[in-house]
Image (cartoon, rainbow, N blue to C red; front, side, top):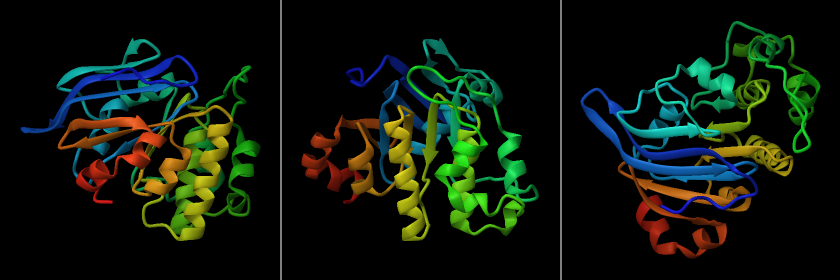
Length: 245
């Protein structure tokens, strides 16, 4: 598997990753790289190992083999908290916001002070709310009082408040109204333009083609294809076979 081409140094490198649940092995040697400032997507049908890969990267699942390196440091065996503190932010499938905290409290609960660099600005409450103006009007509402779309915006905003160097989104637009999906894609495009490294799992191939720099397809826990957006547009046979589109 060739190393990724991108706008910066290699930030995340997953090599030969094996993982599973109990006696059931799900991943059989996944390879994946993400460079600084790059948007990479992980594609595949349901149950093919995408979320298991994310759970392994974030320390929610202990790998059975292979290695996961972030900024050159192996994170295998580290706790989810320690991995998050290194600069990995997750927007999990199912949102998982705090239902009995207000929007403001949800955002402050995960806030980590960021440092402005020559390449990117840090995230704070005003910047995050500028990306999601509807949350500004809901700051004093409890998480369980928000619509599904607002909860998803809050989940993304909460992840950004950790000032992640790499933002990972697992099915961030699944089941949302079209207008909300458009708003989330707009925010992700803005983040990309600001140099934010992103790993995306989503079923909207057209949106992923527009925003993604490189794409990986997985089938039954194995890499089956890798390429940039131009190559993905041309890979009609592989898209039909592995994605059903």
